[in-house]
Image (cartoon, rainbow, N blue to C red; front, side, top):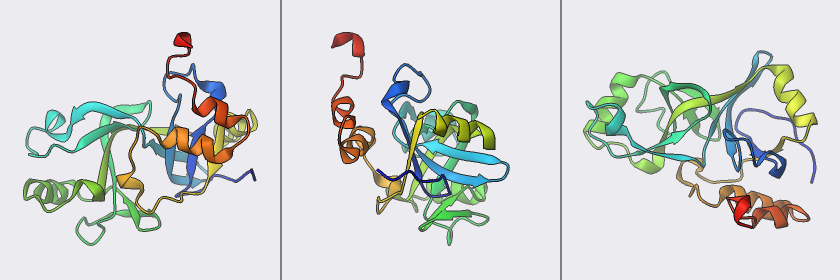
Length: 185
């Protein structure tokens, strides 16, 4: 497996060595920003028990909310592929955008103009300073991979981490099939 550098649009896959980390075990993170100030991303495979209407009563929508990471978990973030409908969106990569005008988004959601496969909501985000992520990569906490999903917003969250490890092959295949609770092994 060739080591890659982090950049917008790539995925960070947590190494099996951090299975005891409550925030990031079995995580796959979609990187939305990587520059000289640091890195920001969203955990794409950890749905919460909440739907959008649970958090914002003015929005009549039952889209799932995901745990984006341990930073600012009281804030709602979203990534989408609708820059033509949501003004002020910031392009990440491959037709995926971050944020935009929330008032317009609210109206679109309330009029059922957005499909769940076109947007994903997160409580919180994952963030690193430049040196922090570099150190974690050197400590083999993460593996950086290309995002080869045609629609990152529509992936099934249950098996993405496992499937990434199976793709890596070798010793990763053993960890891919390890039980979620290692004490049950």
